[in-house]
Length: 119
Image 1 (cartoon, rainbow, N blue to C red):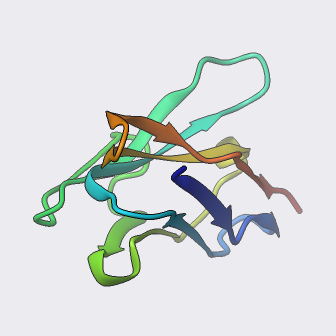
Image 2: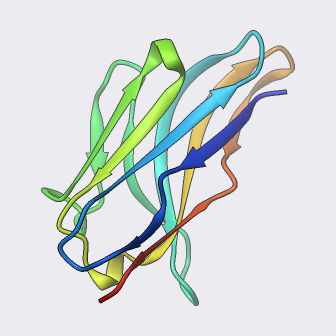
């Protein structure tokens, strides 16, 4: 069974930075697109950034020029570097990945990591 495990969340002051990581574990799988979503209290989950297996990226307008998504295919890991953080970036951040495993291809989600931006 493939699992995604996130790390790197926490409390940071406005203007600060955090780096999130999400590692996939399991046996005999291939990862295609990967991405980060977030969900703030009372709001719908939204896409923050995505990256294809080849490295093509896309971002929500609200995080362009502040966040950077990257991946290490050898480590089955996706990262989200978040700079110039704002209070409105406060949310639970979830990674997701399009994965083909022994039982087929589907979208997997991590358990989420809390990011709080506050002074």
